[in-house]
Image (cartoon, rainbow, N blue to C red; front, side, top):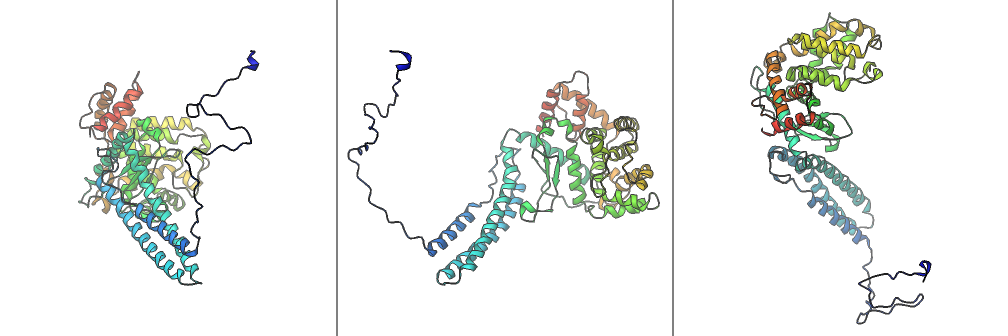
Length: 456
C-alpha cells in the first residue's frame, strides 16, 4: 500500500470496541438510560425580579469583609495591625452606608410588590445600591492590591523602603523644638509601574476611596527604582510632602515665602516661587535628609531633553528643571558642601548651555540668583512655630561628618558587611558612593542595600 493510501486509525481508550455511528443514523441510547421528564420552569415575574435583586445585594454586602490582621502574612514585611485597622475603619463606614441602602432596597421591594406603580422608587434605589457596591469594591481593591504585594517576591524590599520612610519621619519629628503628637500609622510603600514616584498624603480625600480621607501616607514607586536603589532619593522627597502636610505647613508656607521675598525679587517672581512651594519643600528637605546624594539622584531624574528641562510652565507646581537643580545646589553650599555644589552646578550648566534660561519670564530670570537664595532661606533657615520655634536646618541636617560615615558604609556595601547603626536613609547615599567606586559590581551593591535594610 502506498503512503497516499495509508490510513491512521484514531486511538481512543474510551471508545475502544464500539463502532462509530453511520452518518445520518441516530446513535442508540446507552442501555439502561431513561429519558428525562420535561421541566416546567417557574414563571419570570416581577416578584422574582425584585427578590433576586435584593438577594444579590445582600450577598454582595456580606462578601465585603474587613481585612484579617494576618490576611497578608505574619512576617515583618506584612502590613502592620495599625495599617489594617485604619483601612478596616474606612471599610466599616462604607459598609454601613451600603447596609442602609440594601435595607432601603428591601423595603422598596416589598412596597413595589404590592403596588402597580411603585417600581420607579425601587429601580432608583437599586441603582444607588449598585453604585455603592462598586465604590466599596474599588476602595477594598485599592488597599488589597498594595497589601498583596507584601506576600510576593518584593515584600522584603518594600519593608526596607518602609524603614527608610520611617527614618525620615523620625529624623524630623523627634527633633522639633516642642513635642508634637506622634503621627500614625507610619508611611507605607508600594509599587505601581508605568508612572513616576508619587504620594497620597494622610487625610487627603481620594476619588478611588469615594472621597474618603486616606488614613496614612502612601509612597508609590515604580519597580525600576527598587532595581536601582541608588535612585531612591524619591523616598525622602515623597516623605517630605507628607511631613509638610502633617506639620501644618501646607497652607502657610506660600505666604511665608512671599514675606521673605518682599523687596528682594519682583512680586511676579515671588508669586512663581510661592506656587512652587510644595515641590521645593520636598526637594530641599530631601537634601537636608541625605545630602549631596539627593542632588545627584535629582539630576538623574530631571536631566531630560532640552525642551523638557528648560520650558517654563506658567501654571506648573514643579520648578523648571534647570532652576530646580541650581536651587538645591544653593542649599548644599550653605550646608558646607561648596565643592560638591560647584561640581553639580558646572555639570548641569554643561548639559544645558547657552540660552537655556531664555524661556523663563524676564522678571524671574533677572532675579534668579536672589530668588533661589531667598527660597532656601524661607524654607530651611527661617524659624517657624510648626518646628517649635526652630529652623528646618536645625531640626535635621546632613553635614560633612555624615559624609565620612556614608563613605565607610559604601565600602561595607561592596563587601557585604553589616552597615551597623547607619540611619536607613543614609543607605541611599552609601549606595550612590558605592557604585561610583572603580570596579564596583552594582548587583552586589543592590543586594546588600536591601540586605542591610532587612536587618531592621
